[in-house]
Length: 166
Image (tube, rainbow, N blue to C red; front, side, top):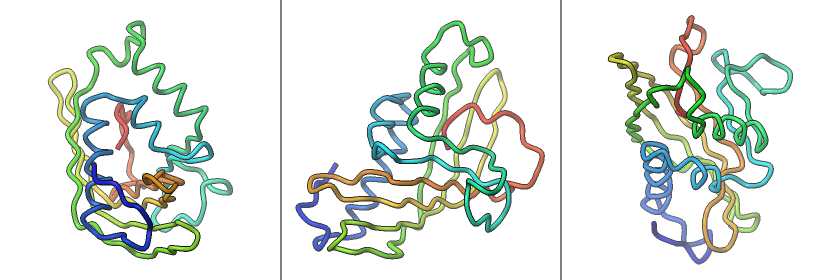
């Protein structure tokens, strides 16, 4: 993964590499390393409706802080979690990456992209699609995720259990 020495040097290729790296960690089931991409107060959020303004005053499909991500990751690694056996496999495709905003002074960057995720488990394949909004913070060495918002195209539909991080 390419490092940036300052946010002033930010370019689209560097941001894309970060998002591709994140997707690869998820596909390779390196959840601890993936979790390490988040700030200590970073959140993973999947709204339950289109244009949902926030995760605190509205019901969300998923809203996880560091503690809740740790609980889910521990479950992924637990052989006794029968609902996850066999462990699902996934492929994340990330495209149409665009930098919506950045501020070199504060070290913040908002990135919008599109995704398709294939999940395979027990002879069944599921396909999820939508848009990501990453709020990133540049810590002087690398990016950290302040918030990852996952906007599913079909967020208001009846959904089966989502057994992977999208």
